Image (cartoon, rainbow, N blue to C red; front, side):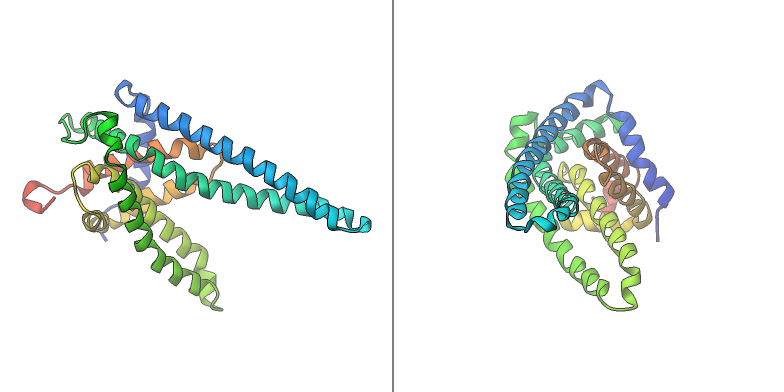
Length: 249
């Protein structure tokens, strides 16, 4: 397999260091602010529903089972946090898509010193949102069969010991595809091209996607992972995945 896992992991951290550059700052601050507002709103709404649900459940319990409140609260709070986190990720990806495309464009120009023939300005980028939604659907269609296979293996005795590693590898693979898609979309390359490019440097792609997946699960840090991953994926694209003109891309 081509590529290098250690090199792949470094792309995220290199991308994070580039976020403070003046030409990238705007495309980081705006989606970050929007994402914080979305996540805060989801948590506020979720807390309201959790409080109502707890009041209803406790009202149905006999007095002698009151101690269950100390068990129910952590379980329901954790479930709400996980659901809110999932919804946040899904909504944030769609809302941030135009900004991520522009961020990848400006990052590539900064990396290569060459202008990218992409959408000019935010309004033009917003016009591409429908195309971005279609690409997100394509990624979901690509992901679901593999996720179902891993899910089935997770419940088969013997194979289920491998489930955590398989879920991690699948998450790393999809994170790589998710973020490499931004710079490649700026060059009007299809989803099939994205999969082929990532496969061409499998180890580097898995190293990059793996560290993105790990950091995305850390509260608060996950707010900053998205822009760092966009720039990191652009570095991966520029340095390893992009072919010479004679090579196809």
